[in-house]
Length: 421
Ligand code: HEM
Image (tube, rainbow, N blue to C red; front, side, top):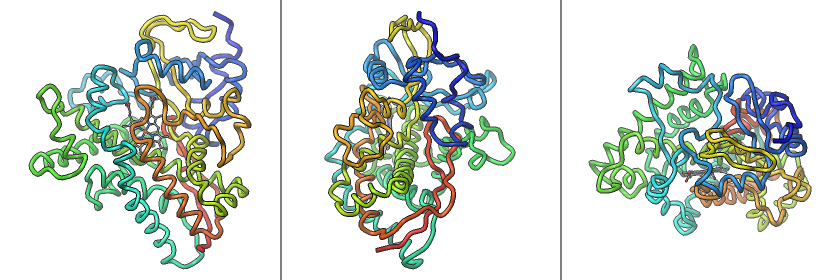
């Protein structure tokens, strides 16, 4: 094995505090790509792991599910949030077993259950409804006057994906705020803003899961008694091998769809607007030519990469680059780093809405490729189409704040001043 070019604790791309302080650590990733692309990280508070920072390696690992598995650990969480030995022994502990930490044959069987709801064809049927929601959000701003200020994350970016996924799943509108709060509390367990007062990050995360599962259990009961035309009914009444889904897998599925369905697209939307604020020439181009919106949505996803990492576990010894990985070792796939890889993207630090080709990996690749990618793309296209047409001017109205998370990351508050067209 070649000597590591960078000391194992020299570059921190995993502590949530790093993200809260300054956003994504792009300089750290760039250094790793340059000096030690498959880097052994030994950061206090985390189990040791290999940081996979190159595009080609994220692809290589994701496409070898026979060598790198998703179970048991889907992402790198610090010891501050991971269940303790006492938690693990507790039979009432909320457990997550879902697509993201499943391998075949279960992964394939479970994925089929909801896949049909997210194909390009199924998603296209939602376009008019998504347009109406996006227009409604701008109309809400208009009601306050032609000019004003708002927190773009909570008042605009977060509302559209939440409403859309709530409608697909079949959650009543009046429950949206509660599900949003619990999902923020779960994903942002290490962010003081979303922690329950007096609780540790671990307790806050567990409490969020318990409450979400209690909520989804009621939805399951209801849809078993009276099925409707929604995804909740499909999952609640699904059978595998003639049996209903076990409760852990069923509630985890609900949790996955509800949380993955909005946290990520929200952060892409707010990060996308922030990118336009930082690159006014690109905003002008989009306003002059809204037909650029599909490419813009793709570049926003590359630029923001709202999912920071998922992990894989090596099933046997494996050579990658000049390293020998040992069976049982953890690999962390850093999507934002792959998406700025100089070997793949010309001028990767430039935000260019006409970037072509744009082979980003923000939705992953391989068997676990994001099931909601078609939906996310459509939501972003529609939202930025409406924003480009209806916002005559937009500028920052205060500092942006970043979420303390190294899993699903992004801007949690983005104050803007706007003038409507
Ligand atoms: C910009 C928005 C989004 C991003 C960046 C994103 C990113 C990702 C990534 C990186 C993965 C793992 C891929 C892999 O391991 O190869 C994933 C999986 C997944 N995503 Fe998304 N996602 C987004 C939006 C959505 C939406 C709107 C949904 C709606 C339901 C969704 C549902 C899922 C599901 C169910 C999986 C698990 C797939 C599997 O393991 O087979 N995502 N997503």
